[in-house]
Length: 313
Image (cartoon, rainbow, N blue to C red):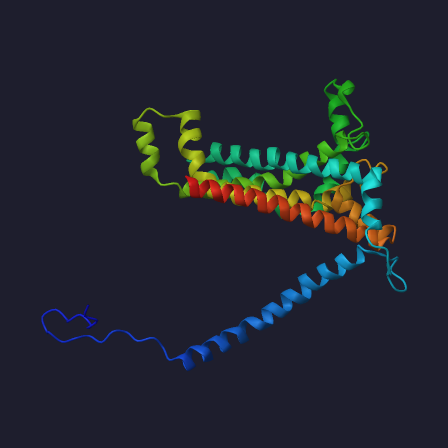
């Protein structure tokens, strides 16, 4: 078999085959590339991996922030699982994950669908987007004013003759967790509506028009055409919602500080209180490590399931 280079059309001249760069040049380029990457790797190692390794070590020690940590093996993990407050925090964290998927993500999708295709749809979504610019602490302060005993909501119910509907919104569990999820929904639904709106605008018109010609509309159009084409964006939105709900802290801290008692604590709040309030760094690090494991596991399982579904489609 001939290995000669093909001839140029009309000239009969042979064009030399492109040659690979010399090995010495490639090695020099590789060293330069590694030199540029090295500072970023050092920063990541210093800010992420080193604290993670130090927290993992602290989870195996008894340490109050003074003196030297005393190695106790898995004793802090055993104490963590035997603590009834930890089980309450685990339950409330599950409520936050489920509630965040149903309310902020679901409501954001509904807002995006209702506004899609309307003239000035951005301005229709804007009022829902403004709360996202407010800090979580400020959101907590606003909703504490509304939901506290004798607050704005109770006063409004009394004004309409519905005083019997008043509840101990922030005092009874798990009602206090549910109303805080509602407060977080007020903040997070707008950005989800914005992301879903971008996804709807990126869907090509041809499949939509073809489905309409076939008689599809309403729920059938959404179920069989719109929703499958939104799947890549939905993967991102749901993934971010899961991670954000597992780390939820600021709204809870501003509204109840995990109380009354530990009735509205989540794992993130338990980690903070054990470490910086009770000065039990070992137990706080054990909770942090457990929270990291379930966050990574939930993210990997969800993304793997979604990506395998995309490949099979």
